[in-house]
Amino acid sequence: MELLNLRLPWSNGDHRPIIIAPIGDVQYAGKNGPTSKALLKEHIAKCQELGAYYIGLGDYIDFASPSNRQRLKGAALYDTAEDVIGEKALELTLELYQEFLQPTRGRWLGMVHGHHWFPLKTGETSDQRLCQLLDAKFLGTSAYVRVSFVKKQCVKGHSPPTFNITFFVHHGSGGGSKAHAPLLKLENLLPYWDADIFLLGHMTKMAVAPINRITPRWVGPAAPDLVHRKIHIVGCGGFAKGYDLGAMQGTVPMGGYVEQKMLNPTMLGAPIIRIVPRVVQREMPRQNGKRVKRITWSPEITVEV
Image (cartoon, rainbow, N blue to C red; front, side):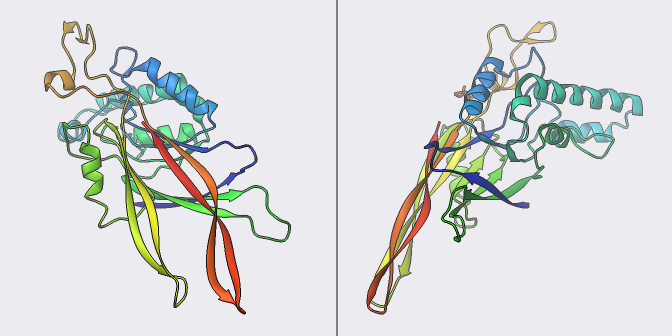
């Protein structure tokens, strides 16, 4: 697991929300692959217009599942054969970057591994090479990403107002045919992990559920309070079509994995997270008999799926 602490500027003067766009399960496999290219381009264009930051959820190319990699490892292939396979993985990675993701370069908070990637002879993986192209931090299997949003404008002589949001990021594992499957997976994590927003890929289902957590706070001996904290668990969708008219396997009319296994079709796309800073006034313990109010900034979070 990786721990990443970032600082990003924000301003309430432009009245624009901060946008975080999780993207994963693109499963790009070239021009004849399952990726809905038009939808991916449309989504990226929308996010760019909104000034989004991105988080990668894995499975960027449709190449080499864990079982594929295990078989190849035991196949004792000649170096030339391994080179050909590695070159194909890099070719798909470069195509994905050039055709779709290049405008997002430098806007990624980080990217985790998925299931579909290929180990290169350099010791890197195809996912790490994509991170290099996008100037993104590679986060391994899972990560906590803590983002401190620092206000651009502040009163002279005072520290700039800041608020923090912590993301738990994992590609995911296992399966589930129901629309709420990723939410069940994430809800099982809640007793053990803490974050403001939990992000999960793999199941290619878009879903969100707000969870209310209540903790007591004793402001003073006579003024106890209950603090309501909303967290969000989010299934991050995907862009690979499970059922495609005229699907081919080589020269044979044949559907892909989803169609062959009779899996449920899912809505394609990815969520968009909107963060709006709000002023919060809290009453503090009296000082010298006077009421004291503390003004802070707190995020209002909505997730669009």
